[in-house]
Length: 388
Image (cartoon, rainbow, N blue to C red):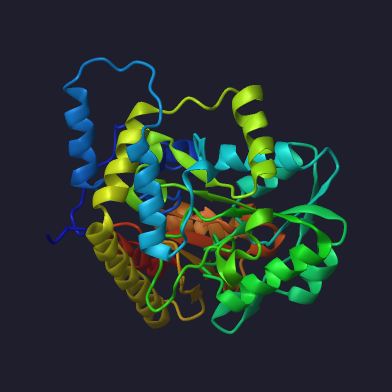
């Protein structure tokens, strides 16, 4: 079956954050929204049909996670990325961000040092600072057409740290860290006895020829006992509204600590019925859909890069190796962030994520979401071309 990702679907008046919150987010209700990380594609038919079928039974009471839920996760992760996980490792979370906060509470104490690699997903900052932990930055370094890890600095920053929150694939730079890089991260965390909290929510969105590797699985699972790996079907299949994610925690003690906070203190153990149905359907039937999605997104990446080089040559696009998010450097335009906002939002009417929200080294950058019909990419560049 061939899926049509070119289809334009109106999401307005559906309580959609991406489209219906434009006035609140941008102060302009007419921007073309290419910001928050969900897709403008239909959620897959096999997911929607599974939800419809379940609704023919008109009782939506308390539910638990059946064996088929665990089987779907285990088979999916092994099939897509070669990591064999076990049922007892799987811990429910209503989302990856709540899970990150649970992990911070479970594995660290107030004032403990936690390392992140900036620029990075804004909720990482909140998980640390709003929980009264100490934020330590290991800034990534722009090298040619991609960002790389400063390992010398990472070695220094991990000294005395309790945890690192890893983003792989990295949001917003789009890096898919290779085995050599992950091995070095793991070795340094071994050296300093640091717990690895790994956000791998984008691990299915990988551009060929790159390949995602779970840090818990590399080097014959050498680092598995210090890893807490978060994943979800939400980014992969456009199911963020179903609020279902999970952590894979091989180490029994780390798992016990996680569940102590998640289920006993916060009572987050009860699953969301539509989320369970959606996850199982997506992971059971989603391979071909995902393969076509990744090919389409790669086409959008190449189109954005080509159009920007042709029409906006002073702007640099860091082509993502994974995720459907591209990191764009507007610094050569010589505009302040406020001036750039006036150009992009007020004049071009294009809504992108502001780079500074990803850390101080995001100043002058914007993040663009390419999980959209190709016509949106063309329209966004055309709008920017007129004013920049």
